[in-house]
Every structure is written in C-alpha cells, then in structure tokens.
Image (cartoon, rainbow, N blue to C red; front, side, top):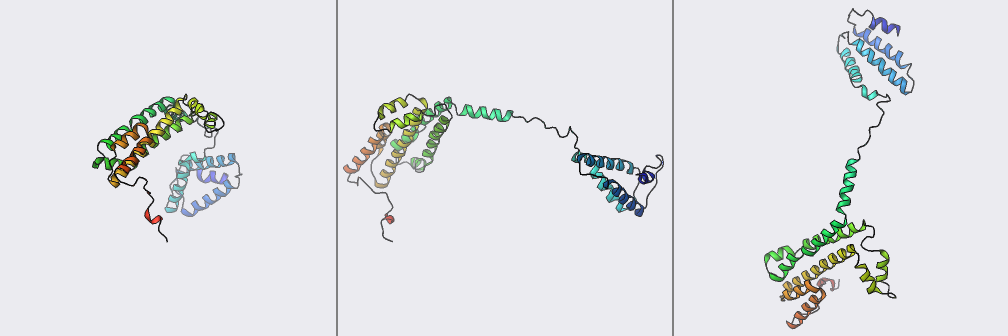
Length: 278
C-alpha cells in the first residue's frame, strides 16, 4: 500500500508519465497486494471493488504511453463503469413488489366468459346458427353454393365448438350441467329413468347442453340424407325438412323415399375394397 501510494498518489499537483515496464511491474504488485488479502466473503469482494474504483479514479490523472496502457485503461474502465454487477448492498437486494393486477383482470375476464350469461348466449347461437344451412339443404339442394358450404365439415365443426363451450363453461358452475347422481339415476333400470331425466331438465345448463347436442346431430343426419340423395339421385328436401323438425323420422322418411323410387333402402357405405380378399 505504501508503495502504490508513493507511485500513484504522490503529490496531488504533479503529473508524470510512466514507462511501460514500470507500469506493468506496478500493476502486478498492486494485484498481488490486493488479492492476497481477499477472503471469500461478500464484504471482502465489495471492498476490493471499492479499491479498484479509487485506483482507477487516481490513475486517470496519469497518461499511459502505449497500447499496453490502453488495454489496461479499457479493462478497468469497463469494471468501474459497470459497478452494478458488484453492488451487493442491502438496498440492491430488495425485491420490488410484483404487480398481480394483470392476472387478476385476466381471471375476472375468464370468469365472465364462463358465466351463466355466456352459456345463455351460446344457447341462442346453437339454436339459430344452423337454420340458414338447413335452408340451403331444403330449398336449393343442388346449388353449387350449397355443395361448397355443406360439402365439408366446417359448419358441423363450428356447432360442435358451441356445444363444447357450453359443456366447458358449465363445469365451472357449482352444479355443472346437472348433479352427477341425477345422471346415475337416468341409467338405473331399477329406478325411474324418465323421472330422473325430467328432474335434470330443471337445470338450465343441462337444457343448454342437451339442446345444442340435439341440434348438432340433427344437422349431421340431415346433411347425410342430402349427400345420399346427391350420390344416388334421390329427392331429399322433404326428408331433410322433417329431420330438422323432429330428427329421426326424417331419416325414416328418406328410407321410405328410397323404397318408393326403387333405390336400395339399406346401402352399405363401407368401401368396396374392404370386402375383397387380399
């Protein structure tokens, strides 16, 4: 310490230039003196950094003669100019409070989305969304527009999503779609299944689920009747209309139409190659 004070701190008003060899020797000695005293503790590490800071501020008064000096300058400049890496003071270790308001608002949004009001809205969607597509199948079954829209499964997929939303939203409600014991009683042959089903109909979420369930499958069957009519040249609007109104009787009417027009009633839709021997 005395030696470094002699070389660097010297006289406050004087400035001199050190040759390269002397500068290297002094820096080696300086590091030996400092790091021999370092102990593996936080306080020693911080104290060492403070020494380097003081040294750099003192060294800045002197000029170094060559590239070696420049590298040393750059090295210590980087270490001193970024002291936050070594700031282990108590204030730097304090944790700032985490703002949980975005999570709270997101939770409120999800709760509102899965509320009974949302289920009621989905019930209306499940009721009215299929009707334009029924109109296409009944009024213009051979139109290119009908074939383009109803030839794929996009409409059925959308209706299935509405039904799934109703089920998922109902799960978050206190009683779900209906109490589980009520479901068990419906499938109890020794009890009163019909009475249990009527009891379940008193739960609004169960009504929404069943209604969207029925309407989606009705459209699925009505679409199949329409496709079968296109494939085999059978008139289908009356059968599709009845399927929309009361479901399965529409399918029976389609079978009756096939019989009257001389078409096969029960056609096996399995691909022909499934029946061929390998």
